[in-house]
Length: 547
Image 1 (tube, rainbow, N blue to C red):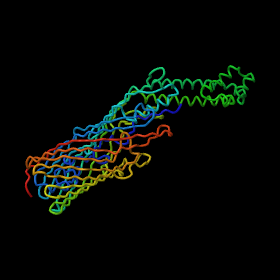
Image 2: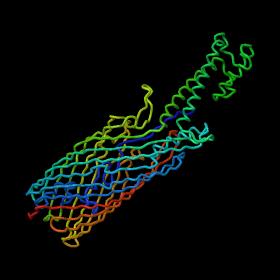
Image 3: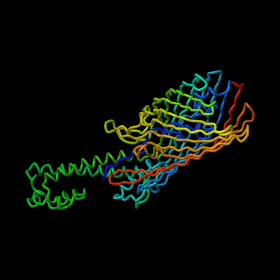
Image 4: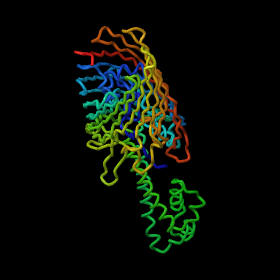
């Protein structure tokens, strides 16, 4: 029998629900962004996030922006693993509340700002039939037990995860001159991930009917233990013959010498044949070799029984109830350059790397068993209570250009790069690189003020991921994408402006080769996504006055 192993989940990082941005960042942080997709040179209130140095271009007074996005995502997964009942899975991600709040007070050359938004995550994902990484080991186990009468399997699998990284940002902007402004600030990030789910009622189909997988495996373990006991007994019974000096005889020669009866010889040989040894090999063995083979077989059967018992524990009903929390600080600097009476505006922002660890808070017995510690005799868990996972947020650079083509039309372009390869989790424990190059984005958008009160805008954004196949999994994957946005704004008066917009993101699906528990088995998993969102927001300017 082949050695039985089972891994229920493989988690590289926190379950990710990134909608727009790098592997960790969200950059869909205002309604104005959803309708334009390029805001890196913004001189409006959402510059608190996108171009904080550009806040000095606001009119003097208080400025407030409140917006919310409702974001929805489908995450289909297709596996060609041959033993699965069905290789199709679909996760649904829902974030009906994805708020952004910005405040700024501009006076003279100074601007003081605050921002609050989900800088990472911001939703929950549900897989009603689990994930390939959960079901594949069960399917493989059922196939492995085919020689013992197993013809199929069934299981009740469910997985749900949520993730949100709340960011509270504050900073100061200063206009060195009409052309040059600078910014310094920081963001405090509070991260919370949760995982809930279960694997229940794992059963094998056999000719005798359906039986729970753990009971089936315990039955095989009992058989293996009984076989080990029998092998040790026979080996012990041979000891007087060997002490007598018959160790060099074959079983047939021992019968001919009258030391044992033909029936005893048949039983002695039949035991090894029952254990799978060919008759001609058994008949050629000396008694020394027969005894040694019985003891070796007994040891193998005892090991097999232990592994089956451990495997039965992993196949039993279990649940996950895990919460991960952590926090970190992101220093931020910015630069804004304005030329040609502010018709041309250039915004630059750099966010430094955020060092952050996530600590597990796991309910007793609900960390998902994934193995066995032979030294302590205890099951190990995928999410042990108190375990710490590195979750550094990579550094981020954005550069944007805004140009006023004519009085009522402006265009913006933006470039982003995320320094993912420098994050603490960019390699596996054995040193394998997960990222070949940094994640980058290019965006372009246009605004058309149809009237003094009403404008329309549209935008295009393309991304190029930098991860390799070692990063991609059913829990964490990254794709190159294309996004289209559209929307507008309506100014009721000088104080209130309504923002509205939405976007749709298409992903370039990835097919990643996989290696089964048997290294000779090669199959593949295909990951895809589809995201859409709508947004509405309100900008408020209080006590504004001309410069």
